[in-house]
Image (tube, rainbow, N blue to C red; front, side, top):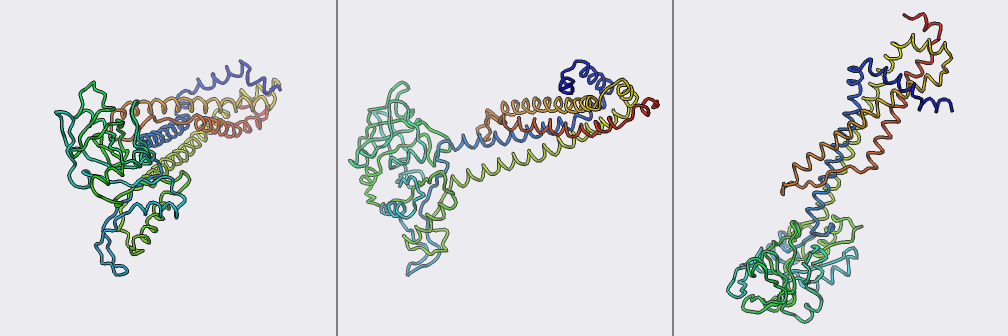
Amino acid sequence: MNNLKKIFDRDTWDEIFESISKNRTRTIITTIGVFWGIFIYIALAGSAKGLENGFDEAFSGLSKNSMGIWVQSTTIPYKGFEEGRFPIFELSDVDYLRDRIPEIQFISPGLQAGAFSGSPPLVVRGLKSDNFNLFGNYPDQAKISVIKIYDGGRYINDDDIRFERKVAVIGEGTQERLFDQDEDPIGKYIRINDINFKVIGVERFTEGSGFGTDSDITIPYSTFAKIYNRGDKFGFMFISGYDYVNPNYLEETIKENLKIRKVVHPEDNKAFGSFNIGSLFESIIKFTRGMVFLSLVVGIATIFAGVIGIGNIMLIAVKERTNELGIRRALGATPGEVKVQIVLESVFLTIIAGIIGIIVGAFLLFIINIGTSGLEDFPFTNPTVPITIVSGAFITMITLGTLIGLIPAERAVSIKPIEALREE
């Protein structure tokens, strides 16, 4: 109880401040190690979080466990088929994959005119006209690409597919080029290949939301297939798996089943092209977590080195104060009181250095965030460090400061009062 009261005793803190003020330069140099350790940790961990947030925002327009798969030419002859064959997808392939791969959450076959397939069709609205990429999609595409529609409109639904409706969802760029500035396009008609389509929605464009642009037009898959006489054949599909599914496993399983379905050699890895968003995002997450772990290791190592430096300086201080400690012991100071005095000084220096490191590290992250906020090609957003991590680092500092402080404290209480009084 007496030792606890000693912690809050004003005389104790007066002695601590007096001891620190006598050797300011040495104290500052010694505490730089702790400051630098926590600073490095905050700066690196915050930067890693900023990268994670940046990539998360960049891929916000896509399901994190999605991929695109399309047909390419075969490169290995197989079962009577020569190389160079294009194994076209059919709608029955969608049910085939669903039945055999329960990890699949959504599949959306796609058709297109323009973009990667031929010339974009001419679209007319009154006296305005232009060429736009045209896509034929299913409703599930909105769940895979996380398509956002402006208020008042909607995306393609099941009835549009079932009844082959002539409806269209246009992009922001399409609206700007075909409609007047303050004109609401919802309910208006546009002509695609001399066929009238009713505009039912305007898509809010998001960078990284697929292979499209802000000037695309989407119509029901069934309507597209009928107009262009595609039957049940298509060239690409978007697929997303459940969150618990490994994206690399899902991609590999899908391709293995497609090879069986389309009679492709098991070792022909070029017959189907793919772009795995889930795998890319998983790699990014692993990279940022690796940076956080690296910052933790480097930070703790540097903090530990700094705390050892504080312990050394406290040992020197104890030696310099031998006479003073002897007088205090002769006047009745208990070993516990002396220990508390020394440990408090060690912990105080550690905490002050750590707090300054946290503040400077947070300020650096603030400056970096301002400097990168206008860079569209650099995925970096809101670099922060969770309070739990900061608290953990703070507790670690206090613990190390206490443990290191015990070494000079034990040295202090081992001094015999009579010998200390003889010390000059």
